[in-house]
Image (tube, rainbow, N blue to C red):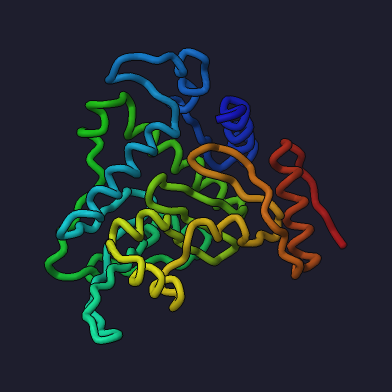
Length: 265
């Protein structure tokens, strides 16, 4: 989590300069201090990545149940499994496709496509939210860490920048402009379907996307904000960038440095 303290300070200063709202990250500030990296017995105050690893593990466990559950990460979105039977090559195969619904809160920040409501889930599927009480039996301030990470995530979305949000062992949520892609780990797909044939069919028919394809998704900025690591990573740059987009990108860069001004053709 390099320079988390500096990133937080920069975002807080930008929000103050904006004059509309002030964004603060009290828990993340604690984690950016050296004391947060001490190896303490649980329950302890871990780094951000460790908290999200536990959240990801919770999601994965619920999705891999014999009767998968729809799992909601408040503020980020909901996962569920779509299951169907298919008769192929003289055999009946069970296909299980993971589906992600971006939360309305995140989607409305910049008119992203968000998934349907819970009414689109199978009627018999149990719906659960991430159990922070159980997580906090292992780590302290887990809910605060998640909420502040998402607050930072929303700030990046409001700036209309691109992001990758990785849930370890599940997949990566990629946002490029107005396009939302949820890509999944091959290991997760294999554990879910327990059939190499089924996984290959899911991929060949492009019913799912592998997370290893995400680094190849271009951005008009040539970079993405990587969550929950709070890193900026280079990606291929989109070639079809208009003058207006370049100007907007430049103005955002000035704003991030606390510089205000107008850019014209």
